[in-house]
Structure formats: C-alpha cells, structure tokens
Image 1 (cartoon, rainbow, N blue to C red):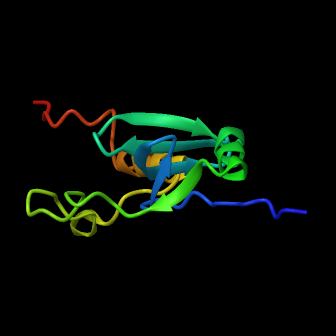
Image 2 (cartoon, rainbow, N blue to C red):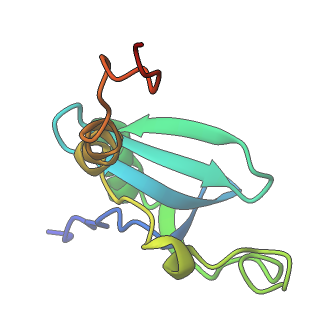
Length: 112
C-alpha cells in the first residue's frame, strides 16, 4: 500500500501546486483556511481539505522561493517590525493590542 503524502503548511515557506508558486502567509486553524500569496503578489485562500487533497494527489510540493523574493534591498525586513503574525488569531490579537490603550472619551481639550 502506498503511503499517503502529508505536507504541513508552514508560514513563510514556499510551495508549488498546479504550476503555481506561492508562499503560505497565514494558517487559520479555527476556520480551516490557509492564506497564500503567489509569486505575483496576489492573495488567495485554500481550505485545509483542498490542501490535503493536493498533497495526497502529489500536486503539491515544497519549493524554493523565487529569486527576487525577499532578497532585494527594496524589501523591508519583517524582523525590523517585530515579525509577521503567523495565524489569524495572532492577527486579531495584534489589532486588539493596538486598541488597548485607546481612550474613547479623552478629547485632549481642556475645559475652562
């Protein structure tokens, strides 16, 4: 019996499927969605079942990043900004953290 191929989606890693080269940019385990960005910059979502079906069929494989990805001086280093959130829950947490110190009732105006 042939062994089923399993490829875990890892944020920051590159893959190739159906001739398309893409990077995993987020994994939402709660929604079973994998967010990807293709080499051209377009964003897409793949549901986990589709990802696993592609892996089992052999149409999904790990790949090397394109030559121009993150290698040029024009790209900003994510480490300079504290890294990129890996999951949707982390993204939601970043947004919630930004709102934590917001005082909706502080106007900045003094009353006389």
